[in-house]
Length: 270
Image (cartoon, rainbow, N blue to C red; front, side, top):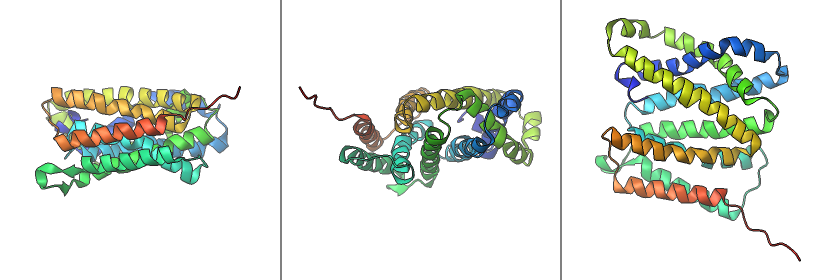
């Protein structure tokens, strides 16, 4: 995403990210639609909007003013919001251990949102990623509770079918064609967006929906804690740096997800 933003605007990167997946899955989606009960279509459309369309625009806009490493770290807030949506809307049971995890994760997120280079002023672009993780959390719960029996491949293909057309319309309202015609680097940037779209979005979502169905929404969301590790590595390779306080915030988030994911030991009766 960071490399693609060199040539394209944030809205163009987001539009391309969704539109490419839409075009690839379009022939399959037409066939899969017939296999999915019509009453499930609204939930798949919601998953597409909450889990793909809106986050794509939020992340692209955020990364115009935010490095990849802190962006990836903030993405690890997804399990927190998955849990909060679960207990508030979907009847998931909570406990003190998990609430403590949420509290630590919130503190850690605050430390990441604060920009120490600006006298500890608030980095409003980081809040865009926080909003994206709120949507991710809701999307995971919708999948678990309403799409449990739907094939993950079908969910992915049809969800992009529903959100792809709006993305194409928005993309067409920009000067993306002019950029491709006049910027020699734009084709390389398009390659980066294609990798992001098919690998980091479509394939990743397919695997994520399968994991959510086989376990639960919270456990599925916990795997997002692998993203910060990869993001930090790539960020460092690309010359980025993190402040000590941001590492501390990252540590608190990791502790929080350990508390949320750890199951209480049960005592067996003789």
